[in-house]
Image 1 (cartoon, rainbow over the protein chains, first blue to last red):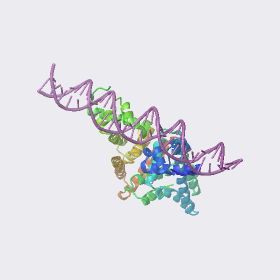
Image 2: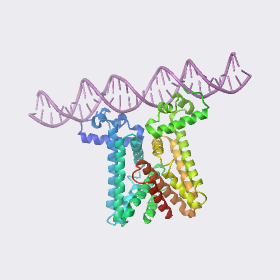
Image 3: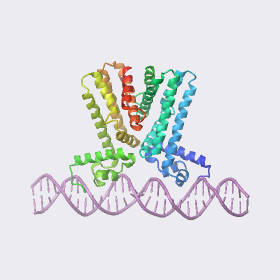
Image 4: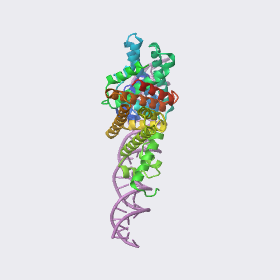
Length: 191
Length: 191
DNA sequence: GTGGTTGTTGCACGAGCGTATAACAACGTG
DNA sequence: CACGTTGTTATACGCTCGTGCAACAACCAC
């Protein structure tokens, strides 16, 4: 039995446990009992704090997406002031820890899989991707890309980075992170 | 009750039913009972013909992947003899029916999700993607791309097409199929 | 200290899951 | 027509699932 905890702290623990379970056991392991066991807590707590598994998974998605966004921003901040370097850092961050992580991909695939029937999850996804593209368009603008070309460039770069990230995590032997960076750099040179 | 059928015909019906179920209900709906009901057949038949749900899903993956490959080859064959046109047709086919289909994406995500714990599924995935890239390298060679640049070009194009296809199916409002083709054409021009 | 609020547990319930098994039915062969 | 083969069904078993509910326990207000 677990000691009594503040609601927010317990919620955070359950969200962390859900992320761990999704990463290790996939969408199939996202059951109340398994998540509660991973958090060292009784199954009833999930219903008590979130009102159902679905809501807990949504909260976990938002949390993981926020962490990814923070990692991207940290990379940009560490890149200095050159607009070109900041743009490159934003893109290359997807091929290094903590983003280029098979466990994160597993979590993401589980989200996609669970989003099939949930309108709330689909909305979260749309928001997250729109945010990524908007940030990218901003960095492209700072780097001197013409306004009327930014949108399509952001679409292409997002797709390229996503596809590379996916394959890099899914079958790490096909190509290296350095090659992924080179591919993105070449695309960037054409823009 | 269903009439007696030849084993191969019944297997094909079950595979079709599985694909339909994965497309409409996601990985969560891939249960013996639901699939059997979709095929108008008793649940026991899945065990009888495939020895378990896992094996049936693997067979469905191979079948769907083969159909995708056929669609790509058909597009290449319809493009005439110009190597450039054949290459473009191979890439653009991902943004038109029957490949740019949310139902197919749903099926694919279900496969990824179910591949989490199955070595056989992961092997099938690796084989499928290696085949896609190999075919692409061949078309790049015919179009006159230098041998030492083909591999990385194929990696980038595969990732770009995959990312665009994913977002096109996942949130169709973000950009159009024509824009996806334009992005690919621009990347191709740089190679 | 006493009482009320609330985080936490354990259990029960109905439902769906995969699979094994025995009975049934259709077909080919003699 | 009889018979063996085999596709097909129906049922049963043990399991996990999500959730509702009553009881317990920790903390806060007074």
